[in-house]
Image 1 (cartoon, rainbow, N blue to C red):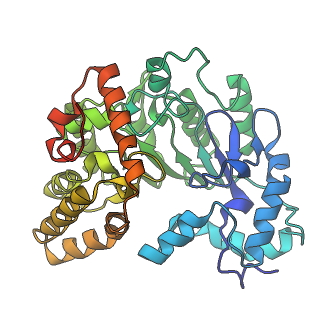
Image 2: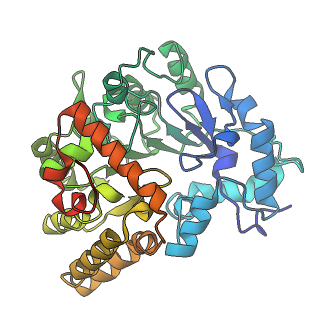
Length: 397
């Protein structure tokens, strides 16, 4: 059993902490296998969770070159694009190399860890959010929770915030990289507590990465942009899927004028790396290219695509005629780009092309219609008016 001989190894099962708003802990944020929840940070310690039976099994499988169930998303993305979240971790986080060299020494044959340290945090402290994106739900959005009139409490990792702060205090000395997501991290108390804690103990060399809707850069008299100046590496992946009224429909709660202002403000900050994350699905199958044009026109050359998987908004479930139109639009847009821009766009769009080439199961097409009709009725919106190129392929009456 050896890391050096394994082609399926990933550092996260050794040094990661990935929490959902309800406190459940998974191997990472991309691991959507419900059967592989390792534990719950509300009721158990990080140390016990990291040596839970499922955690040990995953490490043992990786050390023996097997692909653990639930990790397919990274392995398949590497086959499509040549890289994935796990390879990017090793590429852009040099400290993971140190982890790789110690794996054999700290891992027993059954997968048990003898040295446990939370170096990578993927923290979603609650579902507090100022948006209710159409492809999201109450698990990750308090705005969705309110709209559905669910009477449960706001989801939190810990029922008592003092326990949250205790956990942060105990582990802040070991962390090397933090990925903030949500909910919306920029309107969470815990986010600002972490940053101020790291500053106070001299850990401003910690990498900070965000997935944020960037609608609010200030919160309770705290300015995120001012705090970020104290850190050596800050990267932000703004969640933006369209422009103007279409953006406001997809990520409900968006105010486009404010979002645009904040995006361009962040782009001008030389100390922050900005790479918008575009979630691509049926809702923006035609229009996402207009967003990429907006980025390029504003000198934002870096962006990435996140594909909607598994649910009613998945492009693989579109009618064939819409798939053909989307494919034509994609290639026509590519032809308007410079050679370098075109190469980059088509490389990133491979995953889009794959889904457009997927044979449609006719039984799944109506799922999108039901979702949109319900959203329009609840929010008093009109998808057909805002997205005529998409709606003409569906019966939304």
